[in-house]
Amino acid sequence: MKIWGPPATAITSMTYGPEVESGTGQCSRTLKIEFSVGGLASGNTVVLAWGGHVARGAGFNGWGEGDGASSVNGSPYHMTLGTLDEASTGKKSRSVKAGGKWRSDPRKHDHDQ
Picture: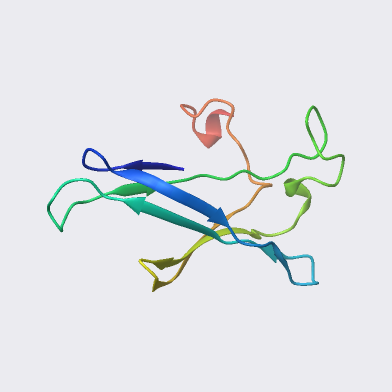
């Protein structure tokens, strides 16, 4: 988690909620992030950035053959921004497909691989 903004802008706390299992192989967890924005102007802009990862199957540090994220069909991995300043954002969701094609050299085009 990283935040950028005027001087003295900072993340002041991050609190994880409980993991919620659906009983159908799905689970979710919330993360409450509190931050302060430096400066005096009420229109200051901040950028809050984060990332995630999905589990490896076979290989070093993997969960085992057939147990990694690429063994799951579709694009079931989502990160959702549900509220901002305790107001709904309309559940802005982004998904990841773990079994997609990864380029070893991002400078190459698909036809070069």
